Amino acid sequence: GIQVEQSPPDLILQEGANSTLRCNFSDSVNNLQWFHQNPWGQLINLFYIPSGTKQNGRLSATTVATERYSLLYISSSQTTDSGVYFCAVEDYGGSQGNLIFGKGTKLSVKP
Amino acid sequence: SAVISQKPSRDICQRGTSLTIQCQVDSQVTMMFWYRQQPGQSLTLIATANQGSEATYESGFVIDKFPISRPNLTFSTLTVSNMSPEDSSIYLCSGWLPDRGTEAFFGQGTRLTVV
Image (cartoon, rainbow over all chains, first blue to last red):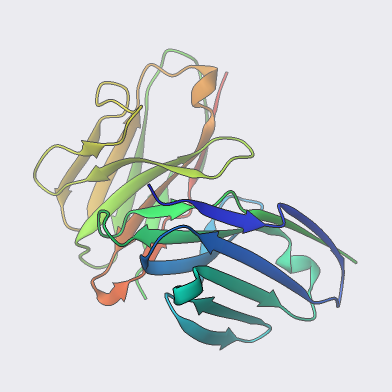
């Protein structure tokens, strides 16, 4: 099956710093989403981005489907950005809506 | 955007007992899924909840341990049966809205601790 790899696994930032999180996937995908999991376990949709670039406030994401990677950019990080960021893909040949998750990047933003 | 209400948000249960988790969606969804997230790990799919028929389970998960119901297009339950401490995890349900492409939405999660 499709493999999803995220890097780095852990990231510690000082408040105000910028960061880039990466997601590599091993095969063609129908769907790619970025999620933020807060300390209470809730999974929050950040971007639905199977291709192209999107921006939402301090966050932006780019997916280059032909090269099988996606990047999540966080600018001017805040302590509330702390948590785990997951990339998830829907296998092109798999069941619709069935997302395969990477192992996540754990982000800690220090004041 | 769709909202999935999941409850309970957390529970502490005795080993050997069962817990039923409920997910209610505010609109009809074609497909619903249940995931497990063990401590410090990523999400793993347990099963696809099929409306009006038996759920489709992934390798390593069985109906006797994780019975699932989906009586209509807006509601589903997952039961964790005969629990042991190894079942301590976050359980999440998700729904898929085809009219929004293939963007999946998630409930708030249920943090289960088995003692």
